Image 1 (cartoon, rainbow, N blue to C red):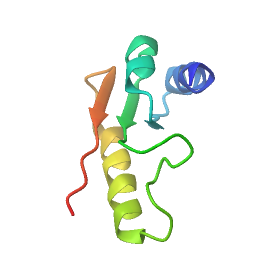
Image 2 (spheres, rainbow, N blue to C red; image 1 turned 30 degrees about the horizontal axis):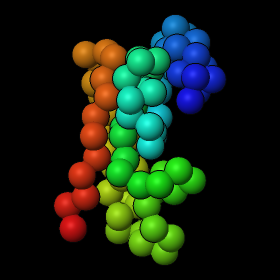
Image 3 (cartoon, helix red, strand yellow; image 1 turned 90 degrees about the vertical axis):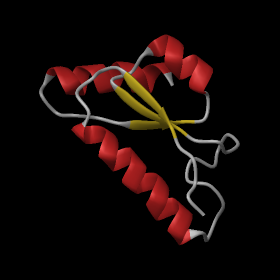
Length: 82
């Protein structure tokens, strides 16, 4: 996660907004990447269960919505609608 946060900062410094998914909110909170979405899934499953395209689309939509945020750093928690 630390490498992702550092890469995000470099990309953001070049004017390109970034967002990442994390399953370790406590670590991400310490690293403070520009934009991150915390998901309640086990490590290795950032988009939730396999073959659940509606959930995966919901996660990606929440992630993409973070790109419009300028109140940085932002760590948002994803909660499924279903």
